[in-house]
Image (cartoon, rainbow, N blue to C red; front, side, top):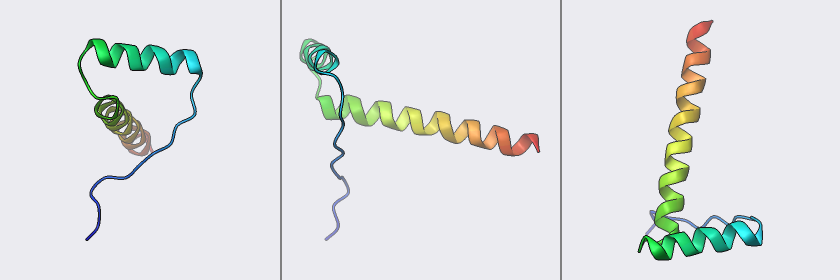
Length: 57
């Protein structure tokens, strides 16, 4: 059976990782949940930009 989720490995600076982890703990949220939301939003923004660029032509 295929998994509905997969793993993504990111390389970020140590300071940013510590800030991210700390803020997730303070917000009582999972780092993966935040990353999924941010990636999904970024994908939507990029798709919107691409659609707008295609419609200009």
